[in-house]
Length: 629
Image (tube, helix red, strand yellow):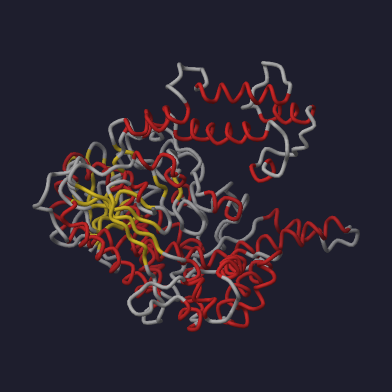
C-alpha cells in the first residue's frame, strides 16, 4: 500500500493508493508538523511513502527521530520509466514532456548547497565517458535537450512547482487525483507509473530497479542526517603539518608561499608571477625553455628542469588546500560530522553524484580525520572487481565467473583467476585487458591481450562488443534491471549525416568515425557500469534493512549521531562499490556478517542462481584511514 504525500496549503495531504493504483479511502490533511507522527504510525502497516522527491520530505521526518522503511520516489522513478526500453511503448513514455521531466533534485535542507543546487560532482573515473553534452528526450515527445548529465530537470527548479501552491486537498474531488489536478499531482503520477510498470515488457525488473532506487534515496538522506564522524582537530593538524599554520584571509599558507618563491626563482620569473594562474605559469615556463605543453602531472614528470619538483609539490598541496582545506572544514564538517550531499542517480548510468563537499573524491590525505565515536567503530567494506564480476553474470559466462569464485572459503582475486585459467600471462595483463574490454581500450597492452580474453571468455566479450556496435549505430542499450542509455542528440546525427554528403571531405568523415567510436565506448560500458550501480543499490538497500533489524545496542555508550541512529549501527558513507557503517564496537562483527550477507543477497536479486561471487574486503577499524592498510 502506498501513502501519497503532497503539500496542501499550510498542511500535508495524504492519500492511500493500492499497489495497482486504485484510490483507497478519502484524502486527508494533517498539520505539517504531524508527518513524522504519521510516518511512525504507518510503519506498522508497512506503508510505502510516496512523494515527489525524498529530500523534500524525509529529512524533516528524520529530524523528529523517525525512520521509514519503504518509499517510492516519483522523480527518480519517472526518469527511469521515461527512458527505459522496457517501458518504451507505455503511455507514460510516449507522452510529451511534463512538469515531472523538469523537476530538479532537491538538495538536503540546511546544507551548504540548500539555497542553490550546483552542478553535480562526479567521481574522477566517470567524468570523460559520461559527461554527454546533448542528449535526446524520450521517444514519443518533442525533442528537447539537457546539458551535462542525462537526467530530467538539470536546470534550476521552477519558481512554482506545485510543491507549496496550496492546491489539491482531494477533499472535494480536486487536487491530487481529481479534475483540477496540480501539474505535479503525485496521485496521478503514481497511477501513471504503476500502469507503465504493468504495461512494460518486464515488470519484475522495473519494480526491483525502482524499489532499489528509492531505497537508495532513503539511505542517502539518512547518511546526510547521521553524518560521517569527523575530527576537526585532527583535520586542522593534517593541514598545519602539510601547509603551515592557517593563513589570514586572502593569503597563501606558508608552505605554498615558499614553493611559489622557488617556482619563480627556477623560472627566473618576476615576483608578480602567480603559480595559481595556469596561462601565466605556462607562459613563464615557455620563456624558461621548460618544454611543457600542459600542467598535467604525468607530462611534467617526464621533464628535466629545476622547476618541476617544487611545481609538482605545489600542485599537490594546492589541491589539498582548495579542495579540503580550512574553508572546507568550516563549511562541510563544522560540528564533528561531514554531511555529504548525494544526488542519487546523478550520473546517467545510475551512479550517484554529489552537489558539493567532494563526497566522491575524499582524498586519503584527510581520512585520518574520520574517527569513530568513543565506544564505536567503522565497518568498511568494498566489493572486489565488481564490474568484471557483473559482466560475467550479465553474459552468463560461467568460465569467467569461475575465475572469480571463492575457493576453500577464501576470496579469489578475479584477475589472478583469469591468469590461472590460462587466458593471459600476468595479473596486470588481465586487469588491463578487462578494463579495455569494458571501456573500449584499443591500443597498447589492452589491444594485445583482448583477443586472448575473447577466446577464453567469448560470451562476456561478445556482450560488450555487441553493446558497442549498438551505440555506434545510435541505438539504446539497457542494464540488467532496465535502465536504458540515452540516444545521441541532434549534434551527433548532424555530424554523422555530414560524412555522407557528396562534398564531404576527409575531416568530416574522420569526425564522424571518432564520434561513432566514442558513443560505442559509452554504450559498451553503460551496460556494465549501470548494472554494477544496480547491484550496489540492492546492496545498500539490504544493508540498510539488516542494520535496522539488529535493533539498538545495549552495550557501550550512545554515539553522537542524532536519533534515530544514536544507538544503532548505520550507514555513513558510500562510494560506488564501498560502504562505511558506523557501529557500536560490541556489534561490529555482527555488522560485518550482515554486510557480507547483503552482498550475497544483491547478487541473487539481480542474477538469480547464476554462480557468480561478489566477495568483499571488510575491515573493522576506528579510523577510516586504516581501513585498507
